[in-house]
Length: 342
Image (cartoon, rainbow, N blue to C red; front, side):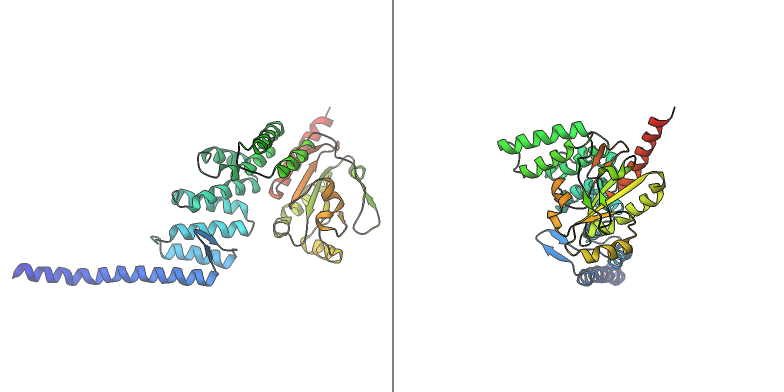
């Protein structure tokens, strides 16, 4: 009899706790469902698609804070990473992908996250870390998807000859069918762009956007020159233009110049957009989009894309991430000072 009473008493205390836990789980599940609806999250198979915005990122952080043991923690961490990636905040995205991969290494989404992790590090000018992680992830599936970012990281380290050899091997492998099928045309185009490094900037002559002057490599003799291909419809171009305006403001008085090559078809919008973005440098635009004279000459197929030329008119870097421009310009300015010092 006493044992039966004790059992009833124990159950009377335990039942509210169990019920409370169940209510908490139900509350979290409903909160997560509501948040996904609010953020208009799309799902395709195992993929999670979300364009990202500041309000949504705050809401995701609040959800993790409110439900630290959430069974949806991996999904929340992944959404934080893709949100930052889609906002072109690559440094923060790299940190977010790192958190996700460490917390959820066995998730199906981790393979895609590894690729984006390496890409984010390159685009935020962290080539050493990108190469380190590429090596760590090498045994994981889809390594070929991470290889282009790995090559870009090597270029930021100045390892042009090594990248050239790797590209040549990739072209041979693709052509022979030994490696997974890739676009040989794209690889060969990338190799031709790379062939410019270490050589004088090829000649050209175009009219400035205002039509009052012609522009050629001679126009920038003795200056460090960044040729930047962009367009108003290119979100990563516009979102990362602040890196270029800061570099320009900091180094222009020391001999750094930028030539913008705009790919908009409607020329009337170019100067207003330049004003909004604080772009004070000369521009060339002919309204031909991908048929732009300089885009065709330099085989530009995606933007943003840029080339960095030293004071002697030698191409030093191609496909420079906007976040890396200031560092590389400062290095070239330092090299120029060493060459001219007695």
